[in-house]
Image: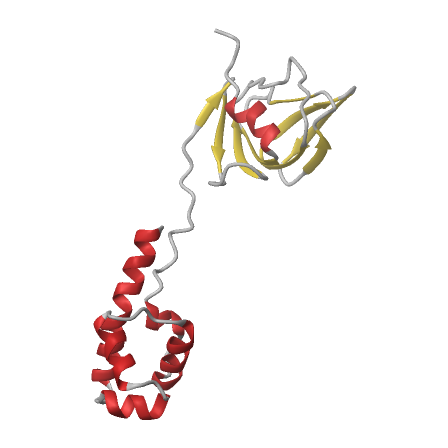
Length: 194
């Protein structure tokens, strides 16, 4: 991080010099219009002085450019998530969030006749939200058994015994949101079956 900041600061001087020259302005003219001394402007452009926010704001106003352009803020990183599939108990999990901890979004693909957690109900701390994208999902929750179809959602406290499955002949795709406890149980846990 410190190297990134040093690189950004080092690039400010040349960028200031280029802007001034593009506009055909001398250091003396710029000093007069901004109230910043010629010496300070010269040292900023040569890298002999670190730019302060006060100086950068005055120069951005004079050049009529956003502050980001003056300091060369890097473009934001590509926000797309490229999930790596994780297969557990026949079910494919595609993590849709990059940051560990907090709420996790996962796409779950149940192949036909998949029984992930369907036979043995599980409990853990947390809360879970499910949205069926396509197919049918069997949700066993406590003493109830529900069939969710495409477009239906369910939310529940995961301290209730629960299990998911797809006993039908077509695959089922589900979008799920859960906290760190649910991620450990569903995505990170290894099967005990061999």
